[in-house]
Length: 184
Image 1 (cartoon, rainbow, N blue to C red):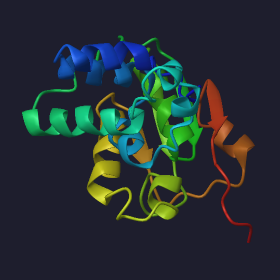
Image 2: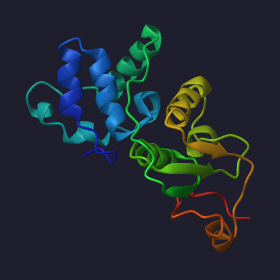
Image 3: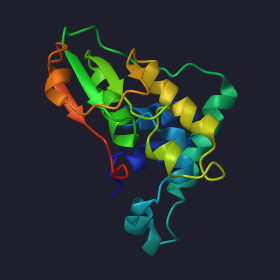
């Protein structure tokens, strides 16, 4: 039931077996936002958890937080693979959760990705709407750094109002992932 399509049963089983690094990498297959989801996800999967009728739902959000924190404490590398360049370039407009996740997936499959963000810092909703007591800035930044680790480039302070002009920069595709910014 999770919108990110993360295989919860897979990483729960790995955690149960004490294979925390593998559990972290499994979540990374779907999203770079492991720490963020461990703190700010509204956990729709818990309502659909089949364990609920047996012994109670599993605390999925807390498990993600655990493997994220454990990964940081271990000092281990991300352990992700990035495919060789396929020669194609994609612009992503917006660096919120959707833009970051799309850039993550694209860059890992060989696309050169540039993210354009209007705000002074990347993260969109992660930085602008979730209070830091719920999602500490260093956790959001660490997850954003996961995207940077793929080679994706993030350009801030760059509001885009003319997509055809962006198209003239030689991108093969443009993904608009602007979220719901306030109107001006």
